[in-house]
Length: 281
Image (cartoon, rainbow, N blue to C red; front, top):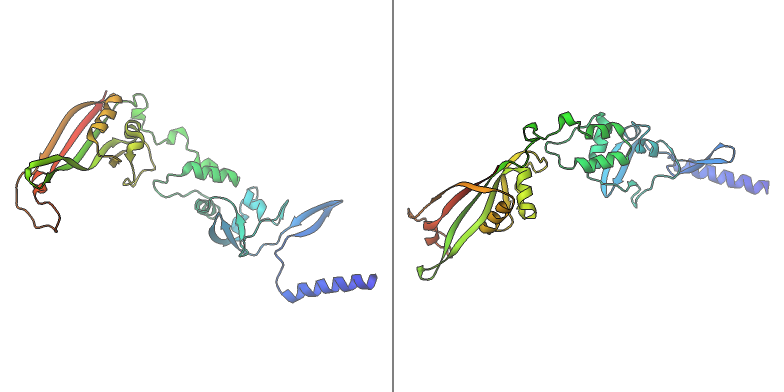
């Protein structure tokens, strides 16, 4: 029995020496009477798979905040080992895109976000999960730094919205004898963001607005998801706005430029642009 035990130990030692590399698999280590802790050895350069997004970083970066979840996970001693994916990368089941800001915070020890960053609350939840208190504090804006303009802190309901459109008239085969209703390509909305969202709700399209992260600002990049001018007016009336002015321009003549086959030159003679200013006092 002693001989067999010696052979087994010798074989295990030989396998370890032949590999030439330190094992990164979790190992049980006696830490006290009747107590076992899992010790996991990590390489100095760590490859991560965070929610399907791959990262490569230094082990010292992950250990920079010892009290954080990452500091505990990659300290070498945890209740359970860090999982690996099929390619051997350490796997963390969190938002892979936002993790770049977590990693950047650990590297620089300060929070640096891109201009008009629109996912502050989601990033705050990630920082809370990884137990990065300093990052949570940086993401929590004090009242003195609130982006809300104090000039509107009392009467936020007062405001102005400008609705505009460019249109033309569709003609039939008989020209003016067969004039159809106006053709609108897009209804534009300009004004304070909070007011525009309040009035138009889900019908407001913000896809062309490059600064759509902030809320208390003005924009001229909104447009509606429909082309029904009267529907837009009804929504403004229901929200308490009154039309206080309008202006327009049009072309009813001029030199016609040759167009591609199938395009109606006659419609160019009836292009028009109109703006309507709505005010709520």
